[in-house]
Length: 578
Image (cartoon, one colour):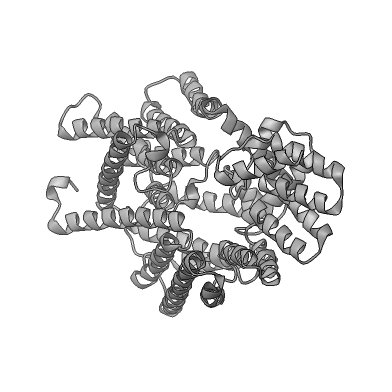
């Protein structure tokens, strides 16, 4: 289908796709900015569940595919959720929704539909690129402020590489032909690449390099000799890797620490990992042990912080799901490859699929140094590219009346239950936000009733439990605070949580356990000053002068990463006590 033959309906469909993806990016930024909400996740859940309903009722998926998805969800629950926390089903819902999104987008990449999807992505890239340019102009080209609608420059960079290799593939297809579309394509490519470089998002730049190189390889494979092709394939791997290491040496050293600690997690949980979504609950515990029992260079230790991502998709997978998860992933990839056998990305005129291959490669390369798949806008576009590569089938699946009817009922019931769960979660999140606001302006007693209401639904939300526990500690309700903080560490562990727990135990007279928690907080993030200060005060109280002197010296020699009045006051008091 040519663009000139598009009807009003086609243009409306493109506009709807653009608005939906733009809205998803807006929700994702809101979720990260306010921490209370998960609206972008809920939108993906609904669209994914709706995708399965459409597949069952329109018979665009076979019984085998629907049954396979449900079987995978059951197996996923039994292996990675049930042994750790049977009620923590969010990762399971996301898996089901991802399958539904793939099913839905596979239909939209069939025949003429794929061109509308490409146009939608190009329009969005124009919008976000222009937004990033305006931000650069308004903020003296500071990289941290060039982020469009996204929470930070890193997320923005990862989104840019979901489309830049596709634009580059289009330009390779156009070759020397000059027309309006070619000029517009070159302008978009240069602007988007410039904005990407200005973000200084290292992982995204690496991914973009890899994606564009792959698109070039796919175009040139028939024109160049085999040895040169092999050389370019090696360069495809080595050049992005060298860029990743050389771009920011300090950051690279910090990532190596994360990888080292993550490997220790994998070593202790090789078969089924620590559990779905439990990296944030486990990693910082290992990091504290690592710094406490290993002779680590001070500069390396100062780069560490509370970490909730492995910044490497393979290590994250092995840490959370172990060898069993890796085997499941290999099986899924094999199925995808089998589906893609009928789709040739080597046809000379098929620039869209060559571009999609470049985008998929770019995102995967970026995922070796970042976490693009946890950003819903990136995930959705990635699934679209995978659907492009594995082919949008035109034929309808043959489903029997009995089995087909069962799947219709199952998908509708799951969609209804999921919608109800989302309504409950959103209501609880609004109560949480109101409680947090009241804690600031009116005190904890006014906020407590809303915390209690929200807690009925958010009892497995680690950030909510930490926030509730921290406010309770500041208000002097130490017993309640400790119960909440202990529960929160099942989902999210941090040095802040252990510092508040130390305060609770110190107030209750349990000095030994308070010392243990302060020590864990101090070793967990060596650059944090507050736990060291708390230890000095504790040892002064117990009369352990040598320990107090040791931690005072460590505190005073620790560089302050983020200056503030509180840090100045703590340092002044520590120096006065020398």
